[in-house]
Image (cartoon, rainbow over all chains, first blue to last red; front, side, top):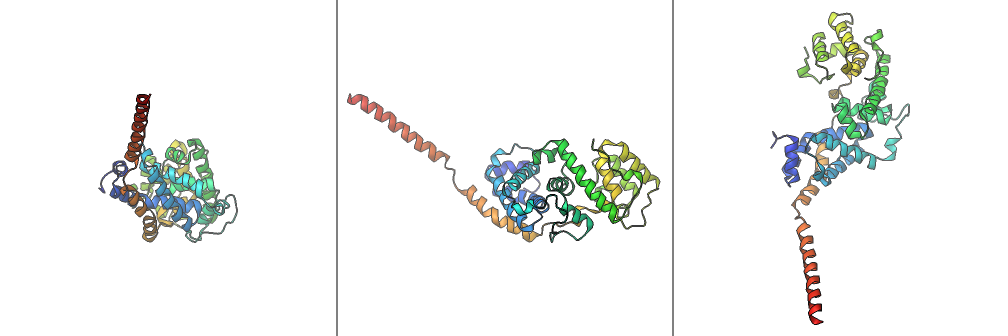
Length: 181
Length: 130
């Protein structure tokens, strides 16, 4: 069972195999939790939304089209977040100094990540922490790939500025960011 | 030396990954306080030049030149088994119960069939009575 691909496991789960779901959960619960943790900046909200996302995935299991399970699951997760995210978490948008969540280290980069606009942070989390390509991120967030790349650019530039202020590694002209292709 | 096989990739460009490996361990390259970084080394210059020219590498260039590589997933919070266990406890019993419960589809079909038969029988009986 553990050697089977996600898609094979999902088909088995669609036919009522609970063990297949348990294997899928073991593989991807961490990614779902991480997505919620860094987008809501709250461990409690991340647990609650993770549960809602898995339950929603169970309800929508028949809609799985047979490809890219994690992308499908994160798309549901992003939808769950939009539906259920507490208003307090959204208030972090565009604030200069929100309270630093306890799970983030007290470093300039982590503070910058917490202060970053929500729409930038979710792209950075999906791209950097969950290693999704931009075309998959676009599907997950229901945006165009160009929009997603633009948000990534803005987010990375913000982090780069913070990192350079903290301690410049390479302060030559090449450090100037270019527009995304 | 840290190689692409033993670390998280910084780029989807294979050439960039190769050049990063040539330069050396990520810690030396990215740790902002490291005095061992040699920006003028040939491999480093080659990497910067490549990142400038390669369309796949624009984001990588920013990360490379800013020290953003220090922000790796391994250095950030990851959920503990206890948290995942709590999530599992919250969903798996519910889903198991749902999967185990018999589908109600056949029941609805049977009820609908009985209604149709009763309607047809009523229709014929009423015609015979006339």
